Amino acid sequence: GAVVSQHPSWVICKSGTSVKIECRSLDFQATTMFWYRQFPKQSLMLMATSNEGSKATYEQGVEKDKFLINHASLTLSTLTVTSAHPEDSSFYICSAPGALAYNEQFFGPGTRLTVL
Amino acid sequence: KQEVTQIPAALSVPEGENLVLNCSFTDSAIYNLQWFRQDPGKGLTSLLLIQSSQREQTSGRLNASLDKSSGRSTLYIAASQPGDSATYLCAVRSGGGADGLTFGKGTHLIIQP
View 1 (tube, rainbow over the protein chains, first blue to last red):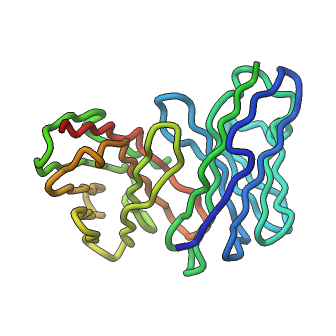
View 2 (view 1 turned 180 degrees about the horizontal axis):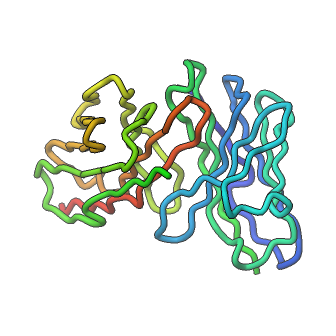
């Protein structure tokens, strides 16, 4: 099956700093990638859809100026959490649809962000 | 707006039992439905994918059914093992293929040795 990687797997940062998370499709191209957030003991919530070559679309309630998304190539999307605060501490996970007409979603291993 | 509900929220059973996890969704106009497994602090492992035109999918001891018109799916786990202990998530993709997934809150499953 298709493989999606994320880097870093975990990060600890000070409040007010920015953190960049990378999502890569390793063996396939993805014109669209999705970013989700999961708070402790909660389910995954879609944050935004990353589109190669165009602006990302954000779900209601997600601040686009705080969560910057760049889909730099057909295999890479980045999520930058700007001016991070403790309430941004969460598990961030990306996914990409497979090559067959958006059939199966393939997920990265996730990034654990802790903001002190 | 699509909402996905999973019942039960938690389940603890002895090893060897057959069990059923339930998932319901409010908008039947789905593209597909996917069951995932999530281990503590880890990412997601895809278990089964059911297209909207299909009624069930099987993989090993797992069988997932889909009743699109009633907005329901079940995940059947046969002969449960301690290694099956995890959180099981149901997610639906609505409408066209460019949409992200809407997840349920999951069923936390513990299989007692």
